[in-house]
Length: 206
Image (cartoon, rainbow, N blue to C red):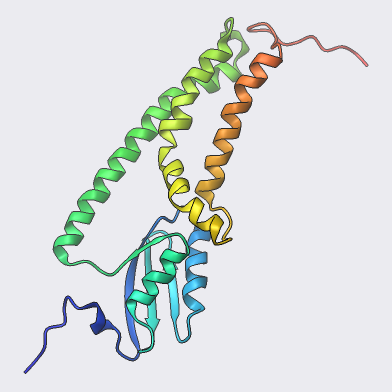
């Protein structure tokens, strides 16, 4: 007589067991390295985290359960889940395609807005009076809407990592840098008088 343990997470907690966890919230390779380091600190646990596939392959002894592994990942400021059923995997695949479409749309719109900003900054002949304000207006949606996935990741994980003294991830650094840049650009425009449009400032000898 056999017992069906397909949907029981505790069935994976046999001696010498292994499991593949789905990891969420990673924004760079250092995130994967941090999670891998945390998991490998557990006694008898050997973990390998793949940033590209967002998967963690973990071997663990009987004294450690899959819930313990998930708790360690969550305490590090990331998300983790056990392998899903085929139906759930299909739903997740559809969600991933939707997210990829959203990211592609953000990329295309951001490119369309950023190209005029770069051209105006690099080609003085195309500059007009107060062109810097036009550049600021074009760049602001890129910095806010286009980079929203980084801001969201930073807001979700940044506070937890700071409380646990884990430092800032790439998303948090990009989030902070974007705010500094957006604040510095208008300040520089207001307090420094730029050269005339289409002309370079005269250089004084000496």
